[in-house]
Image 1 (cartoon, helix red, strand yellow):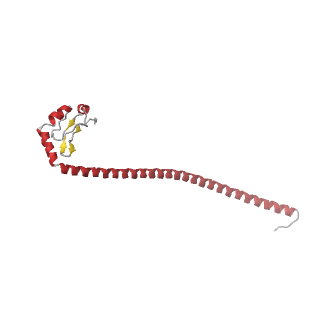
Image 2 (cartoon, helix red, strand yellow):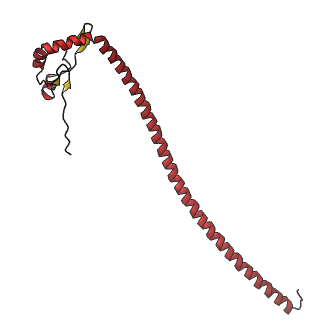
Image 3 (cartoon, rainbow, N blue to C red):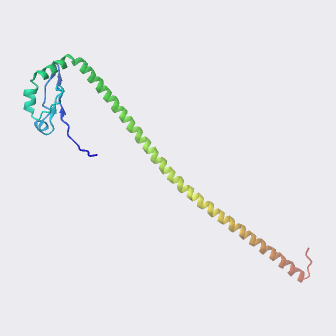
Length: 172
């Protein structure tokens, strides 16, 4: 699938004023018209204008655009109400986004803390296993040493009894 990035034309919308709506293209430069183009919502064909002069003095003076402006003026209260509602909705969504991002940061930190804890736990388990192995080896060596010492003690007792009996002592 071949994907390309395309610049879409700027969607022009008249400015709100005390008397309704007025055409004002001062925010859109001639270069923007030339490079990207501008469309007007009054046109169903979404014609793209690439010349600021043509847009201002031909399109904005056209019958279709004039009727569009009258319709905006008639619907101005509803448009303003909707605009205010949308601004409040955007504000609430930004607050919600901020909270969500903050929660995500907290959860990521918790995940990182738990991962570090898990790594420490693995290391401690490894140390415990090593110590248990060392303890088992030491216990085995101790048992062997104790057994050897018991044998040596028995030999010593036998030798001691023989020596004492040779010296004339009777041991029971």
